[in-house]
Image (tube, helix red, strand yellow):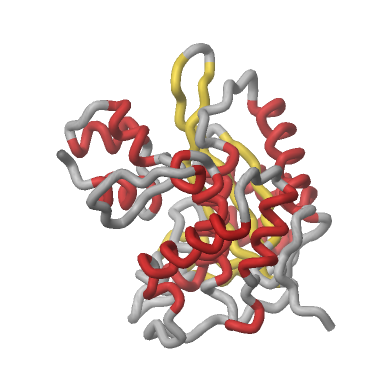
Length: 287
């Protein structure tokens, strides 16, 4: 059987659609969907995991929280008790001991994420800096499964995120989506970090050449007054906040493909869900 790691890698790291994964790996659509968007995914397993943390959404939620925290200095990471209190706000039915056991096992299988020295410099993010990226989500539209794009804006300093669903990943959708995100956020960040997306970058950044923005995106940035920062090639840590948030949205709001009437309705529902999600405690430094 096709390696589940391969399916997950194509979905999360290469942003491939379910249909694209099915074709590339020559597997059943349901198999691709099951392992690409499953709540819990063990990197290596010899027997099927059981319990609420593995067969329900709770393991996925906690896993993403832990992954988010792994990018913070140790003193800013949430304790097991703080995580348990946040879960209780989401009506978590399990015990504190159940959560602690899951966290211990999760950290054992994600050891590299919690190493103090990971071979790259930890980035510091001022409150006015943001990260932007697209993700692919699946909905049910007119009785059939359909892949749509989600544009996500995050502020790493506070772990705050905003998202808007779009029909495509072209420049028109990108710029219109950014306008909506600025409105949701209540303002425009001073700096926005993006990868070498073709909708914004006409010349990709490399070791020998700087990135060159498209005329349309540069004019948009000038109009709204933000500075664009382009990630270095193969440097996922430079926009880890938004990549984590794309995954968080997928595993918390799109695990069961929602029925989409139209984009306006979907975006209204998504915005309400994210507003409720932002009410949970975030790990900002108290001053």
